[in-house]
Length: 121
Image 1 (cartoon, rainbow, N blue to C red):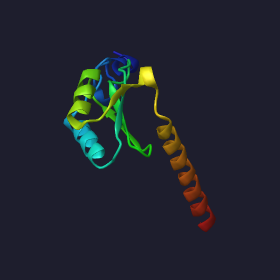
Image 2: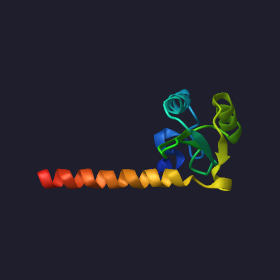
Image 3: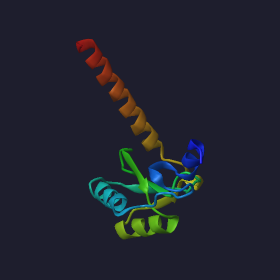
């Protein structure tokens, strides 16, 4: 067996190819805690792909967001119902504008901080 055969048989984390890492209790805990500490939270479900399990992006009123594995659309819908969070399918609705705006604001802030550090050093 050659080196490439060995690499082909194992994916990241030692899993056999095709073995996606599913949602964990830690993923659900993170989503719970995140949603509980923000207001205006909505859930956007991203479909499973060949390399990524089904994920959910929680987006707060100000555009702040987080992403974790969720398992399935059904699981995401149960998560939303339990917490009174609306659930949308990204493939149908796209991401909210406020999420993109938040990401851009964060990028600008990081650049400013880097520029300040560069000018001080």
